[in-house]
Length: 234
Ligand SMILES: *Cc1c(COP(=O)(O)O)cnc(C)c1O
Image 1 (cartoon, protein in one colour):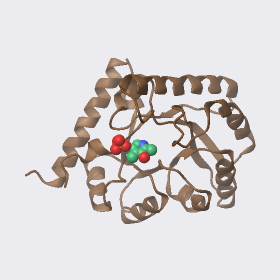
Image 2 (spheres, protein in one colour; image 1 turned 60 degrees about the vertical axis):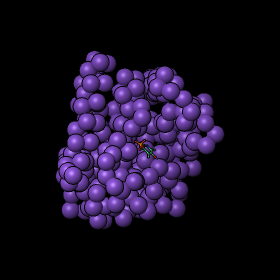
Image 3 (cartoon, protein in one colour; image 1 turned 30 degrees about the vertical axis):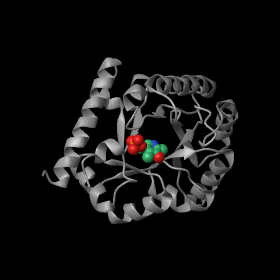
Image 4 (cartoon, rainbow, N blue to C red; image 1 turned 180 degrees about the vertical axis):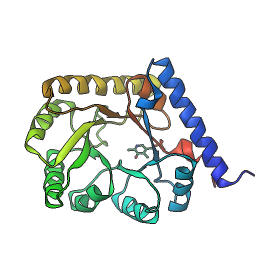
């Protein structure tokens, strides 16, 4: 039996290889794609193995888990990503802990992040989450509400929106996922032209273990991969 570090290392290399292949097929530079290793399934000791194997961007769904793992891995040079729903009462600590909040899904949350960041004399980096599939169970701005959300950004001096985030429809095959991702990219392009030089929505956080190659084909700059990195561990 290979040890746990070898298993994680092998999984990471496979995922990285698939990123390189998908980028090559799309005529993109794989260096444009950041892999966020999603650690929500594993404990801090196992997450540590992934950093050791070479992945320095880690993502957590639940803010409390993000805070806990950040403390336990504070000796490592990790950039943490908040990738799950964020409640307003957890904003203060989460914006201090995470380098990027992927899941800003309402104007109220955006305003709460802005005032918390102002109070803490910092600028919070965020992505706006879009409910691109229209699944009722999903969080995120409706695509039609995005022009207003982006127009509001100009008034929020302590938030910097870097781009958009979405998940593909829960029900559906690779082709459906790909259409969802294409739609997010098109929406981003429209919003970017309305912003002109008042900010850049360069980042597209889309793609998980089951569909990250489709996401890269459609322009993902950040993929959030969990299960594929932990295969073969008990
Ligand atoms: C869990 C999770 C992921 C990773 O999903 P896998 O299918 O395990 O790769 C990515 N993004 C979000 C928002 C998640 O909650």
